[in-house]
Image (cartoon, rainbow, N blue to C red; front, side):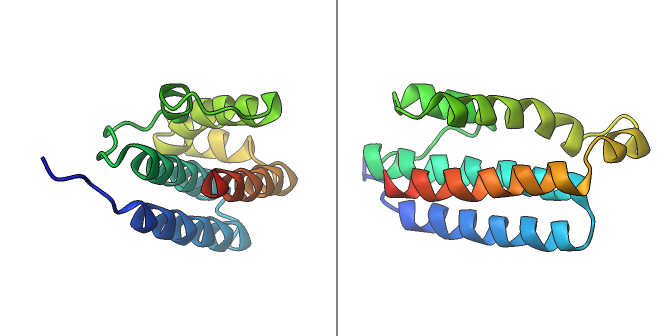
Length: 127
């Protein structure tokens, strides 16, 4: 079986998704910003998975799954953020009540999520 080595493509897509998150933030579309933050970190983690294992990553959306499968040592703050982002990305992806979910994410709260996503994405790519 030929090894899968395209981790750079995962990182490129992670950057693209992070740029999209920023565009969604600027447009005031905060739940899509959050969704793209999650997607960016998911692809960064999958890129790291490929870089370390040379295998195609599982088709999952659980950030914690990849952290734990790789025994990735990160700060407790980073881990808690990924855990929280996992939980909030589902309602952002599939809102039962768009107005209610949208009102849960102020500009400041979403900006904090975007800022933490950028920091963690950089950290993941450096591993």
